[in-house]
Structures are given as structure tokens and as C-alpha cells.
Figure 1 (tube, helix red, strand yellow):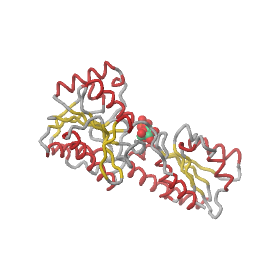
Figure 2 (cartoon, rainbow, N blue to C red):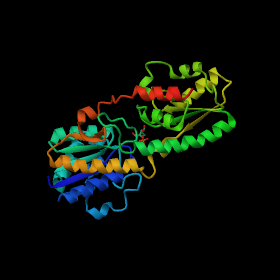
Figure 3 (tube, helix red, strand yellow):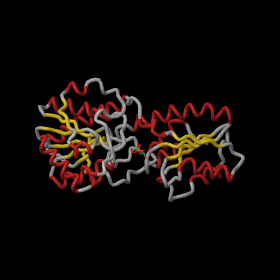
Figure 4 (cartoon, rainbow, N blue to C red):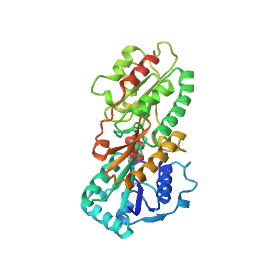
Length: 323
Ligand code: F6P
């Protein structure tokens, strides 16, 4: 391997810049060339590619977002688009690709690697924490802290008015942000997609009785068709239990921004260095993850299979502490 291409793809996540910096510096340290590809797979298709030196990644470790920009690219989903992308890879002399992104982005890398026999490495970059085989993903910790700050503020007004708040958080179809956000914020409950088929979580909450010993209640709701979302749940409560004074806050994209936490910067730095090591050791088509504080290599097909389990223990912690 002589020249590594880097791209960020899908939803941005705090810590992506720290990962770009780590990959670039580790590659230069080991005598490799680095090329930054702009706007995710789109830049591969259109040839928006620039050589990166060590100084190109100075002063970015503290920045949210991604200096490489990101996109969700339709063209790359077609064979024709990927053919064009490969032509640009050849033209630029790139002989390995590192993709920082979530499951959609790693699925793209997997197909591309298979079609063109190009060594590809993935880094888990998503606030959703929904990639299998890694305990955490880049951006998740920062998003969790952002949720925490927001819920702490909502709590002030919720308790002044003695209201019931449904706070909707991101996560696509995963409940990690909602569940751990609820534990960290001391919320009453989390309504998460993982349990949507098991029981009516709202009914369970209501029958247990909100605000037993409290003057206000905050319930975190994971966005997802499977939970119905915060608006829908609030409407249900308003109709069926008019005694509650209900409000909704949808946190939205503010969860994706902000300066990455120390944990995200360290994670991104470790994974970036490990990605270059993996390439030099001949690994490809793997995502680099962290399990029990050790770097692990997870085959793409496993990482993206979309069934990272929620720990029952955490559900119990929240249940016991919200009485
Ligand atoms: O995957 C990250 C994420 O923020 C999800 O939590 C959310 O469902 C989605 O991206 C939103 O995507 P967009 O920014 O394209 O609206």
C-alpha cells in the first residue's frame, strides 16, 4: 500500500475530524501518501480529491462536523457510479480506502471492495452507536453529552410547571442514545425501538404511574417508526389521560454538532492509527472497533447486520432508579 484515500459519509458525527487527523498523521508517519476525498462517495464519483499532508489536518481535532464534508450519495448505489468512482481511484493512484461512517456507508464500502478488489477499511462514525462489534462509535459520547445538557435544562422548566415532557432523541432505529441518555439525565423512562414488539411501553409507564414521588416527569423517546416518536406518544397521553400537562421537545440535529468530547477524540485517534496498522498488516474489508478497551477487526458483513443488542442490565438500571 502506498496511497490511502479517506472519506466521511452519511450523517456527520463529532470526532470525524479527529479520525481524519489520526489517519492522515499515522499514514504519513508510516511513509504513506494520503488523499482526502470530499463529500463522501460523491467526491469519489466526481473526482473531488486532494492530497493531504500532515499540516492539512492541524487544528481540527476540536472541531465538530467533518472538514471533508459528507453526503448520502445515490450515484454510488449504481454500478455505473461505482465504475466511475473506481476510475478516479486509479487515476489518483489510491490503493486503499478508509471510510468513516455508519452502516449505510460501510455497506457501500463492502460492495465496492468486493466489486473492485480494493482494500477497504471502515471506521464506525455515527452518533447512533448502532454498529455491531464495537462497544462505541465515534460521535456517540458527544451526542449523549449534548442530550444530557438539553435534558438538564428541560428539567428546570418541567419541574417548575410540574409537566410531563417527551423528549425525542436521534438514533434511527436504535435506542442507545435514548436509554443511556435517560440513565445519565435521571429521566423517568426511555421508549426505545428494541422493545416495540415486546410490549406497549407507554401503557406500561402509565399503568405504573408517572410522578409517583416526583413533581415532573421526563421520558426520552427514540425517534423511529417503531416507537411512534414523541409527538405521537404525547397525543396519545393527551387524549387518554387529560390530567397530565404534556409537552414535547424534539432535539433534532443539534445532537450531531459540537466539539467532540475527550472520549470521542481518544476513540477516533485510536481507531485512525489502528486503521493504518490494519492496512499495513494486510487486513481489508473490516471495520475497526473497540471491545473491552481493545482494538478489534470486525468483518463488514457482521458490523452492518443491524442487530447490536441493547443491554438488559441498562434497562433494569433505569427501571430501578426511576421509582
Ligand atoms: O445516522 C445519524 C442520524 O443522525 C440519525 O440518528 C438520524 O435518523 C439521521 O441521521 C438523520 O439524517 P439526516 O441528517 O439526513 O436528516
